[in-house]
Image 1: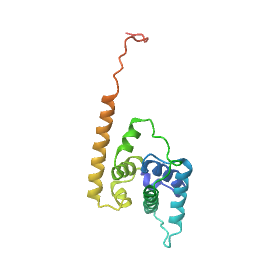
Image 2: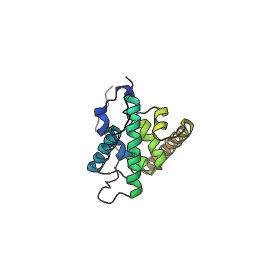
Image 3: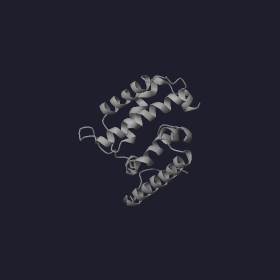
Image 4: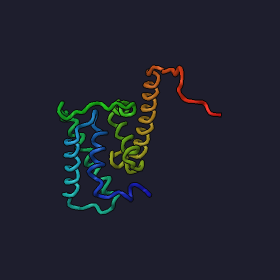
Length: 165
């Protein structure tokens, strides 16, 4: 089943919360991301021409959420809203990407947008979006490779497992 056709309006707030945490560098706390998500939903509902198509509704919600996230980022969210940097290597690498690259990765890999719809959300021509996505994937892979090389190699000097023939 195509995730875009199965997406329902009730799914909006949790998905938009997750998107805000991924897009904003360093993330934000649960209350702030929930407020942003609800504000995006209210903004789309208040439009004069309601969107009836599920794909267009989803694109419109994410465009609105992205604008709200840019406003928060440009205003500089204070220390009360900034959360800890996640400990996973993938999350550290994701937050090390530029904003444009992170948006491309998050929209396609996490939020499961098609390339075409992700380009619409970011208001980019498809070829520019694909170039950003390719660069983001390469940078993410390179950063993960660097992290793997930095980790000390653990040597297993004895195992407690039996060998069964």
